[in-house]
Image (cartoon, rainbow, N blue to C red; front, side):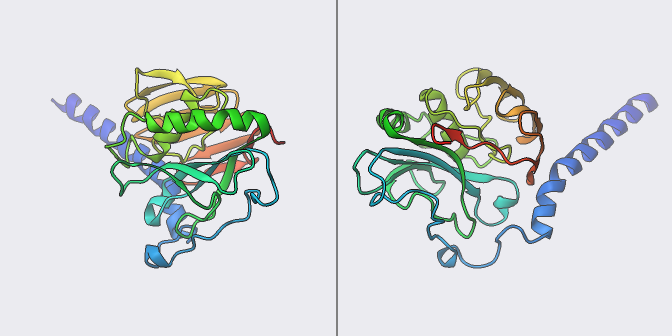
Length: 258
């Protein structure tokens, strides 16, 4: 009995230590005021970050993927990701994303492609132009219309807005994008436990989005523990940490526009 209690105590100590390590990053993000937690959502910045090319200046097709810290305290843990598309000669962009407060959750609408997400500025993850982008646009729209969990949203471990983008990338092989380690839900797989990563440069194993392992050329090595990712990027040396995202070189913006 004493041995059993001692073993149980050690497991509890290890579990508490692991949980503390996983939460250290998000706690730091909140404590250092790097996350916008003040103000009503309706008053927070939603203006353009001036990253996307204006349709008035660029006639070629454009496909871009953006990520921004999630709204309020959730931003300490992860990001919200969306896809913006502009067809050749079009005078507007369409955004494809999943919104937790909508049913169905998938929303494809005309909108500003690079607007801040309730006070948090966007980061460009992928940028495709020209004929390749034009070919991808109807494929992206079709994949978005077939998302299998349009009536279900779970912040953790998924399916959520990041699960949706990972789904689109797998359904449209030419859309290669390396999702950040803070994209909680990206590891939620819909069919089976093994799948190609969204960048198309490796594979991942995931059990319900709760635990898993990812190995890829672009993403590097990531271990998913309780939905939070820890890893290392070898190509562009950096540590990947929950909440903090990266410590080291910035990630590569994938696409055909270098």
